Length: 413
Image 1 (tube, helix red, strand yellow):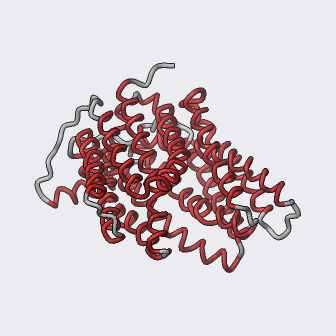
Image 2 (image 1 turned 180 degrees about the vertical axis):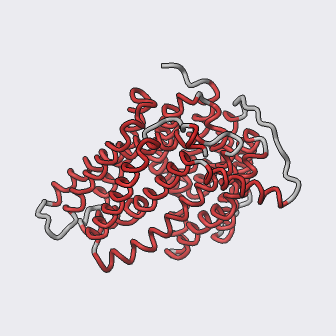
Image 3 (image 1 turned 90 degrees about the vertical axis):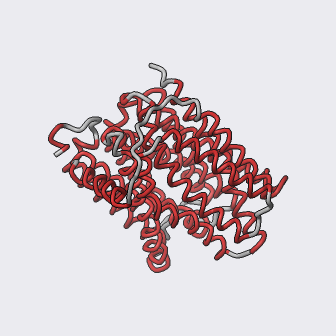
């Protein structure tokens, strides 16, 4: 198995360091806001302060990521975010209004950072190694999300919000230190006027629409995201807590089982399956669908399964779904990275990010009220049917695209 290379590992380690620091702050900040305000509305403002600026700036960030030096953007924005957070601590900008403003600035910086790194990262490895590379990066992200929250809770209890923000600031500086040694060349094309930004955006959209291979991958990913996000964000936690009445400890264990499964799936791709994973994508979707059925039954009024037994069944289900989801997502992401030339990558991936983020609030707005009227098990069944229809359609008409690694010449037309 060939090595992935020095530049990839510098990228992966730097990313892991910043993800751990970010996870620490992500846990500490809500605790601090709630301790100070005791208000769910204020907490919602912080969520919106992260989401809305990202949605507004992503398209422009994509153009910047294609036009300017991606390595400079990555390193500069990591160092800038570290400096911003260090200034928050040094000048004691810890009021709710100040932190809300910082949240907005960080969201904008993160949009430009993501546009540059998502466009640059696939160039750091060989095309045939993208599955392995993606699975390693995703595994590192999962580990960061597993240890970061526990570390964040401890740090907040020990040193408060100041120490949590300081840890995140240091993580950004540490990430930048690794990234600065990455070897990456990119010819910058400066933006002279606003019309060039618009032209680049239109060109990116035109590229997506003219490429059948890419259109199939994109529409499939967005359709599954539209059904899957409401399930993971609303129905799953609601059912565990409100329907099954799991304790906080039980809730946390079942939630963690999904992350454990995702980690196992990514390790399996990195160590054994690699590029062959994509051949099994429809089998994995069938497994995913079959795993949902016991969950729907358990939360229905017809189930006679004792709660303690249901707890262990759902742990197994969480591990299985985490593994299958990872083994579906990695080949789709890798094929998207292969299908988009590097000069278009910033714009295309930013456009996909906007569309993916838009499906989240739309799904939440629809599913939340439905649960109140139809009950969670019926809404779960509807989502299951919807996902099944999507999978069947793509299996009948586009399975050649979803199971192939490379687009054929006619798919570019």
